[in-house]
Image 1: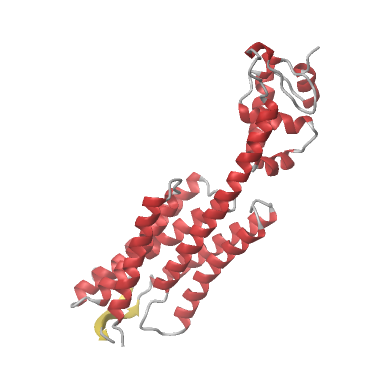
Image 2 (image 1 turned 90 degrees about the vertical axis):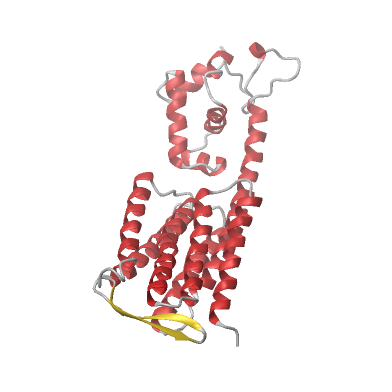
Length: 322
């Protein structure tokens, strides 16, 4: 029979290799995904060092290491899921979440110093691996509330993404749902059934691979969007080799626009302008350019400001060559 500490060791090595591979071979990195990969490694390293501990003090130290990864992992996953749903977590909310996570970690790391988290804890060897037998303290339930809140927030972002049609495809939405439900299911099973093995260590690896697949899908959609934008830009900025800058015309369903006014706009604002001209609404523009409705609103406001107009009719009247 394989020793439990050997299994934890293998899982920790796999976690480290995944983190290093992501950093080494993925050129367009998502910083929160990097943090997620290393938090999984830290959690699994904690499980491994706990399993090979020889004393209660060593086991408590390893337990703190495992909690360091476990406490911050839901935060990183929430930020990643919110971005995948095109509803990124606001910066202020992210800072608040980081502060709360730090507080929860300090509480979870308190055993050995206070009886807040564990009222009592003993050290034992089970199936060749060390284990902590715990009597939970008054603040232990805060960790459950903390995890439950993050799970609810993740589900909330996915639902909001579906309702607001921010998720690029049903496959992407399904994958997001599987990632969250996998962790919820494993966590609930571990609460209901007493195991001598932390199955979350395995589910973390599975989630890493699923999230990597998710980001691969997102990057494919971004490539499609970039291709569509480049095609539209070719129509907007069709200068020709023999044309001077003063002779450039904007082609948007055949109208001729005044070059001097047009030069005030950025490339992205020209993309928005083309779609405005053909009668697209703000939400339709957002969907077609793969940007948020709020971003479209900002571009339109910027266009109006640069052209010094207050309506679409006034804008096109000013742009058209007399």
